[in-house]
View 1: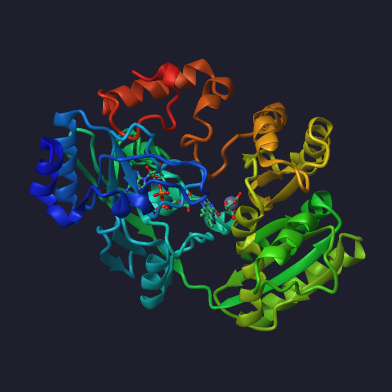
View 2 (view 1 turned 60 degrees about the vertical axis):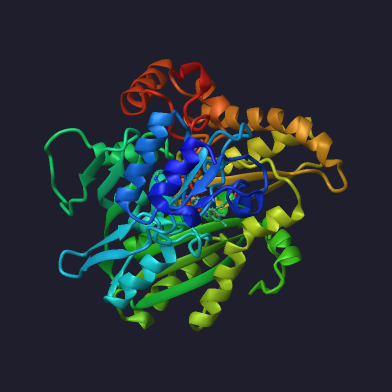
Length: 474
Ligand code: FAD
Ligand code: 2HG
Ligand code: ZN
């Protein structure tokens, strides 16, 4: 056992310092199976004090640290490089709900608590925590914060940043910043909290958070709606907004190709429509109570959509079980994509009004370079966020597709640049997009980011190779 490992084991106990290949296996590859790294050890601290001790030891030994939560990153953010030098800092043993304040509408949690557990704890207290995404059964609050996760309810409740009041963060040198306040108003200087949110483990290790809770919506109405294309879906979005206001909670878009892929790979997914349409949206409304009124509003909006030629067909969920079945389709997309092959993934955002035209232009542009390429387009239409995935042509050699994928990504991201959009709406930069940062970010922005990184992590030990491009690293 070398000195570093011995010191870590001294603090955490040998059982919480994993060094064997077998023990480390679940921690060194990503959910998509795109990256495979190596680690000197995976450490599993059980408290904030443990995390601080680990950071002090790693700083002394100049050992790189890769924070990891549920390891569901879509950008390789939690996977170490192949050098085998990194310590993976797994936060999943920090898994307590510290406090629920039903009057102040807040919940204080450890960073390693799984998102679904926070949702359940809020529900048990008669409150609601709205962050919702396909990986909620395994992703953690710390990972949600570090990635500033979005998901399917951003339209109404905002991203993780907007759901957070306070943070506890262990710095690279092991000092603990206690910013665990539950204040909705606090203008006493720079918003350090917002700096750590979305920093992907490159500025500090989040160990705790105070999150906002909301009144629990008791009424829901969901519809699975066939539309012609993204333009019709956008026009329908405006109609539903007019009729339903902020009762609109989710407006999720999927193309027909996307639906066909789900039906091919997800055994328990059932389309609630007579035939696979050219495109579909899953609409969800929610309110405090009065489900009949909510359904009436949804029906009226859809009737207006039919009248205007926007809606081709629609199914309204008759109960919670049917609504769940609608969501099974939507939540099966990432899994279906993985089963089909290695997609070139793009998580882009742009002004909502530009989306339909973007899809048409990008589809044509990628097909010019790669005839037969299969765009699988879906996402959070109301947020201006599309998951623009490209699959190889049927029967195409995966290696040939992998060779052309960077060119396809350049084409897609150039179109995004033309619309002043973002090349990462919610999945972060991780290692997937790090080389593109100098191309897509203004030099001044990169310089400021570099200075902040240097201030908080002068030795460059926190999640190296992620988010910060090499050219601007110390
Ligand atoms: P990890 O994957 O473990 O880590 C993510 C990043 O955060 C890494 O950079 C890591 O170093 C860092 N990190 C983790 N914990 C900490 C910590 N405590 N302190 C500091 N840094 C930390 N994302 C969306 O935004 N919207 C979606 O709809 C969505 N859907 C998904 C569906 C599926 C099926 C999957 C697999 C992923 C999806 N994601 C989505 C991506 C992902 O961002 C989220 O799953 C989640 O936010 C990651 O949490 P995690 O605990 O798994 O983090
Ligand atoms: C979603 O919205 C996730 O389902 C994953 O953000 C997107 O797999 C993807 O491309
Ligand atoms: Zn998404």
